[in-house]
Length: 115
View: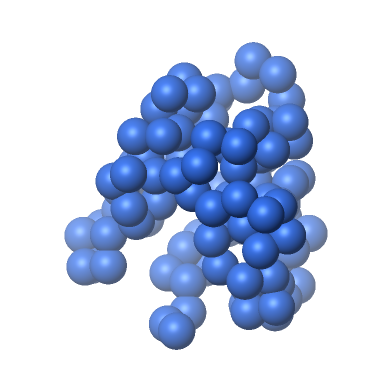
């Protein structure tokens, strides 16, 4: 698997918003990828631990329980089905595709607007 493209942006994003992870990766792969950056996250929901996978609504409910009630959410994912499911929870969404589309450059302005 390729390294996560957002890793180098996490510090800057964490100064603008509480960061949470909602991932379909396996915990034993994902957590070592985060390494020392894990401290930047307020909540982590991983499907291999939760028992549900995106786009199952139950995993979004599990993640929602870790988010401050009423706080705006920007959900970034590489699958449109997962984005649609997040939108049913009132979350704002951004497609993070595999191509170098510059999606990482869109996150900071969106966080500032939502903040």
